[in-house]
Image (cartoon, rainbow, N blue to C red; front, top):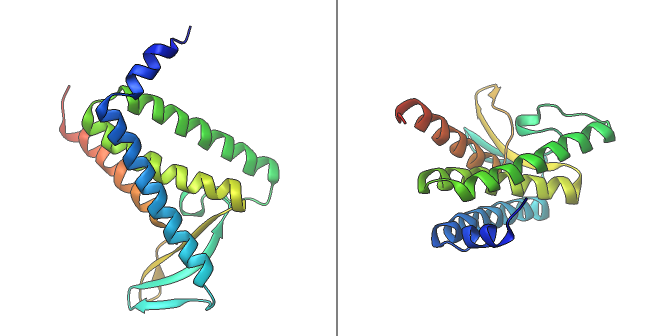
Length: 163
């Protein structure tokens, strides 16, 4: 049985406040970047320099356009899985040590930003286009950067820290 008092006490701990604050700040930064690019995007591609363009792409899949589909059922199924993963990571994050809380907050903050877009726009606006000559990396957004950094930090801990 779920003990609501225990859950409330865990959430109200100071370190959990920072955990939730980091998630919120990442979400706001991601929202701001996407709002600006959607609002100001008139050109097909905004050239920044020889390695970076802003090119608005609407992604219906998961990270880097994987699992993109025109099927509403498949899209909703993927969205349901993503929401479950976010809730699971929040639950795990609340019970974790400070390092893991920081790592999970990066992942969750980015995931919540992209999930919000899935709900509002039925797609995620990706716009950062890294390239070298004719090689273009997958187009991504600020949320994807935070998710990637969080996953790399999580994996690094797994490789270098022994329990």
